[in-house]
Length: 174
Image 1 (tube, rainbow, N blue to C red):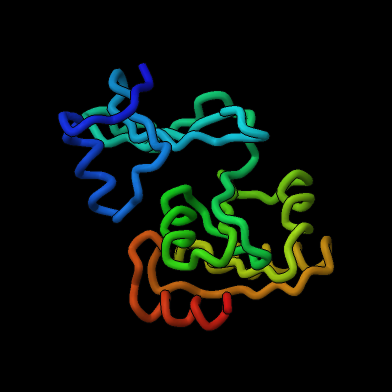
Image 2: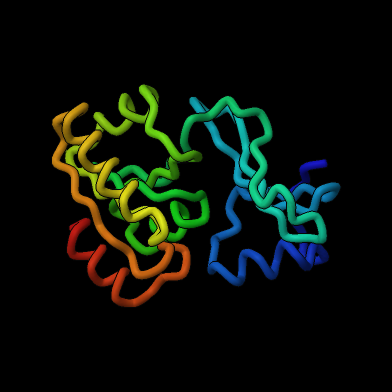
C-alpha cells in the first residue's frame, strides 16, 4: 500500500506543506493514510515510520518493521538528537551542515550509543515535555561515549521552527 505520493494525495500534500518538508524519498500509505518516512541502511530500505494524516489517528506513529533503532538525516560531524522523524528532517533542512537523529523511542540503547560515538559534538534537544530526559540523555551520552554533549531546552518541538530555538541551535551547532 506504499506509493510514491502524487498531487491527488491531498492529505499527504497538506502534511508536507504544514512542516515545510522536502518531499524527496517520502512515501504515502494509501490504506492507512500515513506519510511514510523510509529508513535506509547501506542503500536498502530496512524500516519505515508512518505518521497518521487521515481518519485513522491511532496509532499516531507506526513502525513498519521495527528493524531500525533510529532515523538519521545529514552527514555533518555534529549530531543533533531529537525525538521524532519530522523534527530530524526539519533540523537537517535548517542546519544542512549537521546530522540529525530521531531516537524513535524513549530510551537510549547500545545501538544509539554506538552511532552517537561517531560524532565530534552532540546536542540533545528533545521536545519541551521531555526536559528531564534531555538532561538525562546528555549525561548518559557524555559518560558512555566521552563525546562533548550539550542539553538544550526547546521552547517547542524543532519541527515548529520557533525563531528563538532556531537561533540558539544555530549558535550551538556551528
